[in-house]
Every structure is written in C-alpha cells, then in structure tokens.
Image (cartoon, rainbow, N blue to C red; front, side, top):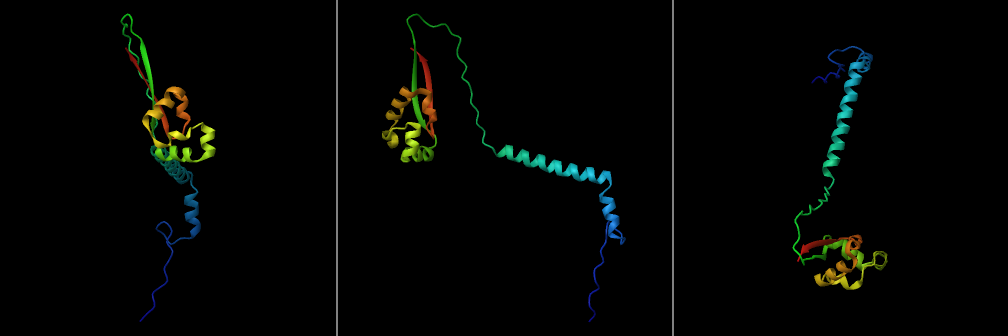
Length: 141
C-alpha cells in the first residue's frame, strides 16, 4: 500500500509562490472590496440592533374644537395602572426604593381604588414609581 502524497498548496489557482497572493490582496481594488464588505457587515449589525430595541411611542391626544354648552364643565379623573408587576413589587418590598420613590406600603395589595386614590393625589408624579403608569381622562359634563 502506498502512502498518500503530500498536499500541494494552491494559491488562486496556481502553484506559484505565496507572495503572489499577498500582492493580489494588496491591490487597491481588492482592498476596497474587503473594506466595503466589512462596512456592509457593520451596517447590518447596527440595523439588527435597532430592530431589536423596544419601540416606545407616545401619542399625543388631539383635542376637539367643539363649542361647549353653557353651564358645563370638564372633569378630569386620574387612575393608576400597574404595567410591570415585577418591578412594582420589587420597589414596594425594598424599603430603600420605597422611601426613594415615596411609595406607601398599602398599595402592595394591588387594590385599584387605592391606586386611583394615589393617582388622583399625585397626578403625573405617579409615573416615577417603577412599573406604574398614571392615566388621565378628561370628560365634559
């Protein structure tokens, strides 16, 4: 049985010296192509990172341009909504965070009337509590 022959190195289709491939890679055309490929990869990576970011859009409500009837008035009601229960409970159970954000201990039971009471008292300051959002509703009565 004969032993397999050693493999020959082939550079760009020829058996010439390795220096020839280095010279070919150093040509301006090839260098620009490699740089363009790296730049395209970087752009793809950045685009993917942007696609993976959460989308947070705040839509401003359009007010009506309607004349009001005589004797009516606007009523604004505030409600508190727990949007992230994990973050909210972590803040309620941690005494340091509870003092920092001014969260009373009696809201830990998730009673909606209690959350609405604090939302009415604090208005938009309720948004500083972790995992809680204040909702404002204005109606004409």
